[in-house]
Structures are given as structure tokens and as C-alpha cells.
Length: 206
Image (cartoon, rainbow, N blue to C red; front, side, top):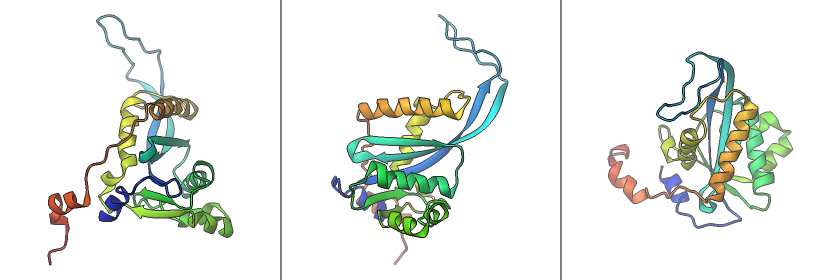
């Protein structure tokens, strides 16, 4: 826990950007009947029946110090999908960075080993060397600022029925563009000193 909190204290460094990564999934839901839109004095109405079109996975990549996030919408949640997100961060988002300081949880695919399932060993090793990884502790995913961004995205963008992965990607990209343009970010205030007081029951008794 303290390791992640100390990362959040780092000043901005374009050669060592701090990026928080997390993922979530959403069902793809298609209406069976055309919803009734909002009318004066009457809320919108949706039929209780729907068609389930599978599940979409969403990778949230969030750099809080520059108020920027990017979301990749994929059909699956596999080690290969995660590996391609890391390559995107290394080669597209931050090609000139010496290291990408990456905060993420301990999900089974969230490991450099996933790179070796997607790429040849030489390429996987090259990508491994581009990252400095800091894992949130078990049951401590709330320490990941990307999880907070996912919560905002869920309320503002994903709180309705979306029928296809293409439509979801379109809606999410519109949300990302607006939120980036507004320079919205997370103002993190919980510190190591706070943790030692408020969460002292988690520390070993000496």
C-alpha cells in the first residue's frame, strides 16, 4: 500500500509518466422494443425484455497528472488483450518515455508474463523493460485511481443499454474526449501518513 501511495507523490516527469491501469466488463444489451423517450411529466420507458449480445471488456489507462485517460474496448479479457494494451502504452502513448510507471492490481493477467503469451521473447523482453510496475495490495484495488475513473465512466456513459461492441466503443470514445478536454482528474489526498493512522490495524504489531 505504501509503495503505491509514494508513487502518487511523485512530481510530473514526461520521461517517467505515472499511469494507472484497470479493467471492467459490461454486458451488451439490445432492446427488443423501441424505448419510449422522455416526455413532459413522464420518464423514459424501456421494456423489461432484452437481448443479451455478450460482454465487452474495457481497459482504463489513466494518467492523472496530465488529466488524460484512454479506454480500449475489447471482445475478451485475456492475457493477450492485456499485453496489447501494454504495447500500446509503450509504443503509442509514451514512445519517448524512459519508463512508464504503472499502477495496477494483482489480477491474474496483470503481469509481465502476459507479454510472453502475445509476443516473441525478444519483443516481450523489450516491452518488460519499458515498465516499472507497482501493484496495489490484495483487497486494496481502491488505491488504483483508474478504478475511480471507471466509476465515473460507468455513471456518465455506461448506465444504459448498449447493443454492440462497436456502439460501446463509439460512446466510450466520446466520453473520453469530453473528459480529457475538460481536464478532469482525480485529486488524490490519502497519504502514507494517513494510512499509518487510519489503517494501523493492517500493520504488523511489533
